[in-house]
Image 1 (cartoon, rainbow, N blue to C red):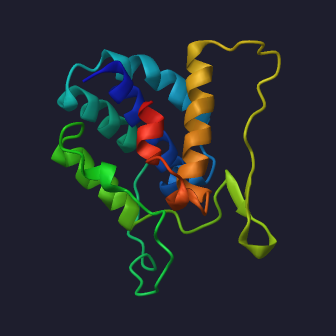
Image 2 (cartoon, rainbow, N blue to C red):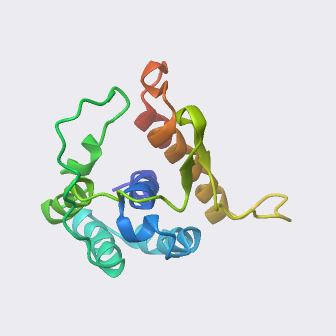
Length: 174
């Protein structure tokens, strides 16, 4: 695995857990610090097994996810932007990790999220994000944190993502 591929998976999983995992969505963790602490671990991974083990352990440490009774709905939603194909990437993830990520999707956070709120007319407002002052040129870990936050906000909340002229996953790798 390349360093770029490993970091891209970290950015995706960090955002996915931030918005989907019920315990993370409650704001119980210093989520920025979690990302910063996982960068060196992810970079040390040598293959999909070691990478997946890091993610599995991280997810397990976040707490038990209860079965969601209201997640399986027959409601029709606009889903042109909804694309979680990467959860099943057999080149990057083991079957165990992919299954765990799919379980989180099926039992995702249904309560208020600590990091976003809905405003009138359905607009999303990003909230409770730390402000990092006095960073003229932040170190690499904080630049990655900024990139991943931005990428995930577009990934999960930009309504016109499907109209962009470039694949959003490719943008993260680039």
